[in-house]
Image (cartoon, rainbow, N blue to C red; front, side, top):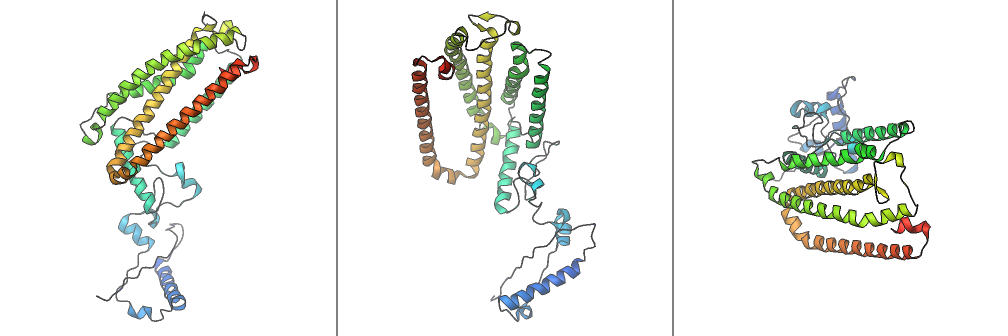
Length: 339
């Protein structure tokens, strides 16, 4: 009773094996400097005489007791090469069942960031068990660079080997749509016996059924809506298709263009379905951890969603009216833009 606890945090560097760091000497110098500061600035002149118990933890002790790399108790420094996507991620790039959390992984050090790191780690684990890809962002960036380089090479080669419309589909539109379809099939078959994953499967099945119906309706809509004005624009000579680059035409438009309407709609629907499933899983994870906080803000979120939908609808209506007025003006220069 009637005792106080006093803690002093002294910034210091980490352990460097290449240097001869005399930690006993450094600790003694730091201790003397702290006592001098307390005497001069806080006016605690007899502070040292009242010390009954003292414990000093140095980087060497952090390393020995807690196996911290180089004795750094706050993890990796926030240097440019260790920030954002360049910081070690929450999942190992090769051993996909190995996950990380803490101050040395994404997003960074500090208590709030460490708690966010734990949440991200839980989300990745549950998403992987539910069949969702949890690719390392660095790997995704590498794949994007490879894709851009491939497109650049194809652009250089097309002068010597002209690219047909069907070849364009096989290179650029069919592969991503097929990859997303295969991924959806894999997720649909990834049933588990884990309650924290299976409780969402029925919701996901309903979402996928509605998505299939909506995709079919959108494909019909894209064909029936786009076919008239696309044929009209080709008829007016606003754009054309080289005869040697297409298989055959239906009306004024090649069959590959009709395929493009459908493939583009399917690919967009698959991408949107994947995004909605991931969002549903993330919301379920967060609601289980922050149920009380979410229940208090549900009304505000619903009102915000309604406002966003109404604003989007009004913007679409205004653009439609403007496009119709532009089309009725009779100018050939603005027909493509208005349609």
